[in-house]
Image 1 (cartoon, rainbow, N blue to C red):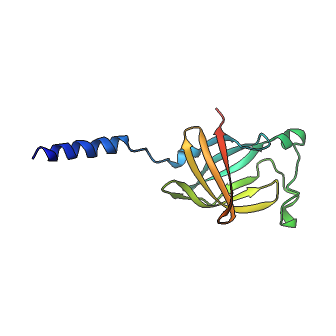
Image 2: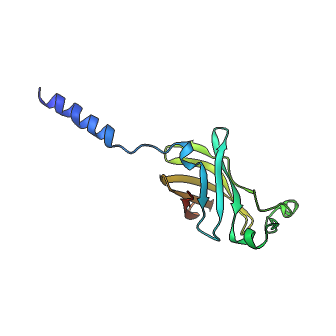
Image 3: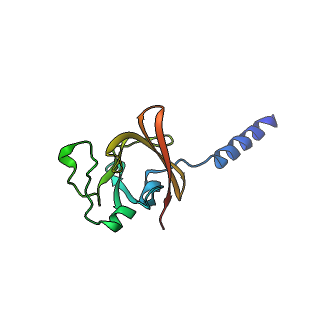
Length: 142
């Protein structure tokens, strides 16, 4: 019967060593994008998260820049600063799925996922259709 206490000890050690799942609040904050020195601020949006563009190389050059590449002609005059880029995500085991990622550089909206790597890193993936996807790693701005 000595095996029984050993199994409990092993199970407890595995439970303690198991990685803690990312929580929605782990994504809250300002993130440096992988291109154009962009800054996206992710906030809570109801039970989800959303992200707005707050700064970039292009905005520093032209603070009044408009969304002129948007595929919808009626949205091409909206300001880039404060533009909603991340929305509609649903919590999943690894982060967030089923959201939309808007890319003002090409005017496209893609299906997206967000995965937290650690407290200062997240991975954003946008897909036209799977497997036609592109990923970026964003770093937290402290």
